[in-house]
Amino acid sequence: MSRVLTRAVLFVVMITAGAMLAAVAAHPATHDVVKVSGYAPGTIVVKTGERRLLYVIDRERALRFSVGVGREGQQWLGRAKIEGKYIEPDWAPPEVIRRDHPNLPKVIPGGSPRNPMGAAALTLRGGEYAIHGTNNPASIGGFVSYGCIRMRNADIKALYRLVEVGTPVIVER
Image (cartoon, rainbow, N blue to C red; front, side):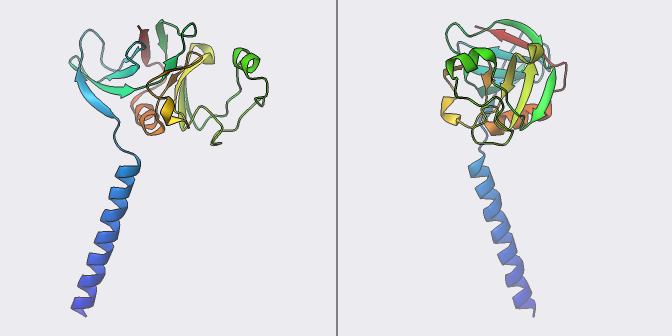
């Protein structure tokens, strides 16, 4: 009986380890820790020219994520605060986007593969802009949006857990 129990335990351990490795492979860490100075801990800093978002951990370190940013002429610079936090939000295309894409529905439900907000969103400036996930990870690293900051879904989920409403956001070149 002991031999059967040992084999069963080994089987469960192997299956569990395999599942954990598969989960890590499916959602690899896509951020790194970098040196930073001049920003208060807890601040989000978006560097549009580098297509990077920093979450300042302390006076010397930040988590750095790759992001997609606004296209030429659709970027904004300045300061804002996180005004809302949403998991799989519905998306109602703003008028400027509907003008360029008149066939879009008035609302795309959260969780839909067609919803450009992805897994989560942190809204800014009265909801005009957001830091959000994307269902198009190939767009990360480009000048691709109407001013929003796009992150891989795994990355926005990580950032979502770190920030609160009121978190300061600085968008720079």
